[in-house]
Image 1 (tube, rainbow, N blue to C red):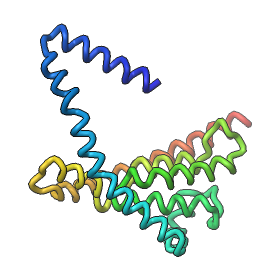
Image 2: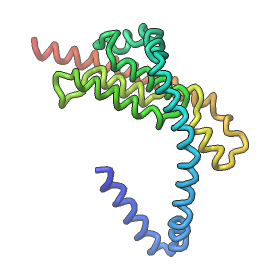
Image 3: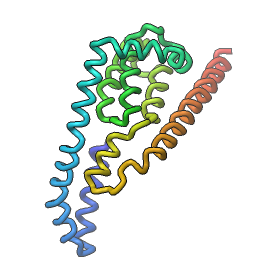
Image 4: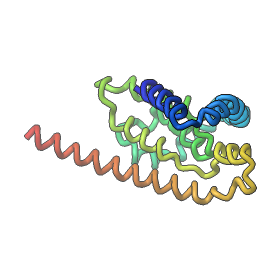
Length: 200
């Protein structure tokens, strides 16, 4: 579906540029766009490679298991369906840790592995479990202490003070995560009450 939407946006943009007489802008973007994308790619990839490597080392050294044990009370609160020793919690811990460091792209593989583990234990493969939904909410909110990827992008575009938005990022992601988890709990309780009333 998204492929169709992006295709429509592209075609509409090209047609509009011809009718509005802005073909020179279109040509300029076609020429300069790939260079800007390549520069951004070269800025972001080293950070992603570095932190992905560090997190794999931490996983092999058992640091992530220690982190999981440290965060276990938090996990028990928001993932009541999961066993405290569930393998998915290791990947969730990795995902959350990398998100805290602000390298959101590097956290994706751990998030996918967490979802795979949760799906394997899902009795109904066509419907997401509560833990899967909660993890998605937690991952989307993505509390960020150090917005590493944003700092890298701002630096690559010549920002005089790339770190000026750090406090705003922390507040915004913290509040969005808290609100998301609150709505997750409220909607879950509401659906539970609805199901119990139907069965009665």
